[in-house]
Amino acid sequence: MRKRKPNRLKGYDYSKNNLYFITNCVKNNLCCLGRVVCVGTGRDLSVRDSENHSENHSENHSENHSENHSENHSENHSENHSENHSENHSENHSENHSENHFENHFENHDFEKFMFIMELNQYGSIVKERIEWLERQYSYVKIHNYQVMPNHFHFILEINNQNANGEKIKSVSSLMGALKTTSSKLIHEAVFQDFEWHRSFHDNIIRDEKSYINIFNYISNNPKNWWKDKFYSKD
Image (cartoon, rainbow, N blue to C red; front, side):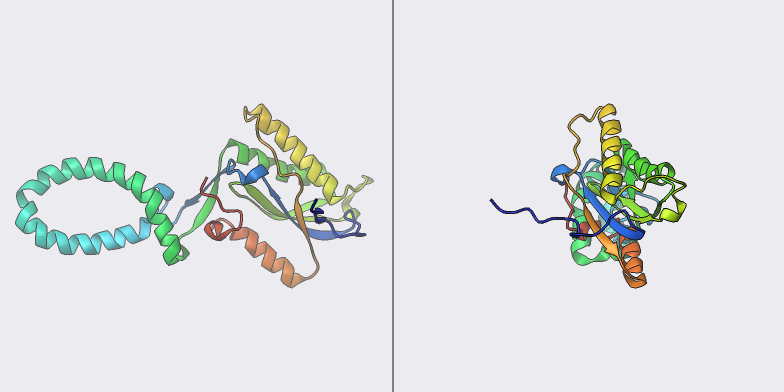
């Protein structure tokens, strides 16, 4: 049997003052915490080409429309286009364009011009609240940055025993145990009985300012880079 690689640094005291980069995944990387949406034009990914469509449509449509519509569409366009285009375009564009066009944008790297955020569902909102709860519950804990994603979350956690107020300092594993246990319980109560976290979690001890800045930015940019993420799933 293949020996499981330990996730914690052997011999290290994970209750000592430090900054820790934490990642935890839903079991089987199931996307159940929400979705990443485009907010570049105030619309979500149901209109994924919000920027290019307005540009290309205005350019191509103005050219083709002036040529073809003046000849062929002058009589039919006002009737058929208004009826069929309004019905079919809204249906087909939202269905086909949302599925196919953004993936093409991703392949062509056009996504760089968009802004993305994570739109949490009720389960993702529970996870978000539990991450913030850690800081409220334990006086020695500070969350510097965090991001809940469709099937995982990241955060930077600081332990500072000077703020303990006489409390016993819990290790990172104990803190994560509290977060995972309470969030699972609340998600189960929200009628998602099959929800489970991955058995363990990943940590990285942040040892210098450069690492801190890189990790902080990585977390902040996670929604934008979702389609390049190793945890990415179309589900």
